Length: 165
Image 1 (cartoon, rainbow, N blue to C red):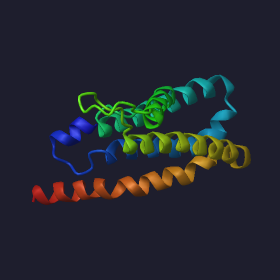
Image 2 (tube, rainbow, N blue to C red):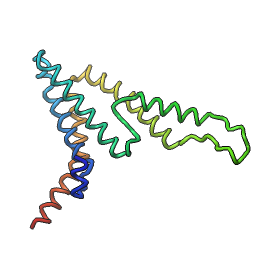
Image 3 (cartoon, helix red, strand yellow):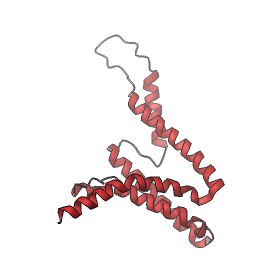
Image 4 (cartoon, rainbow, N blue to C red):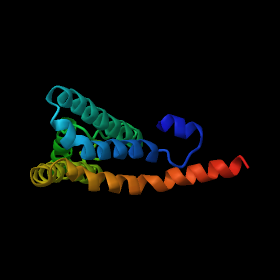
């Protein structure tokens, strides 16, 4: 989707997959309780839908970050956070200019720490939301994603309709 939008010089480069993800999340929120009653059908469809949405999210963030950040798993994020923390507390004892000093990338450290915090906050919030509101917890999140992604998509639709006139 990103390559398609990039090739056509669309402004909704990242908004298109975000909109798709939002629509699928909305579908999950609206249909979740109904699908849960169909035991044989629910688990495979739900697992496939959630895996697809996580993969889509990971692919978009990977494209945006130039393959630096992955967002659907924490193992690499925690490893990279540990490396940067190690660099941060490393004591460079040599005063010789010929030796390269070990220095932490503080911006990367902040990004990695915020990703870990977001995972923690999202996991706790999602568990509490599901406990108290069920599948409908995802509906406000989907609405927010739709609101964020719809404007660039409409801009592209309007600019495309103007260029054909």
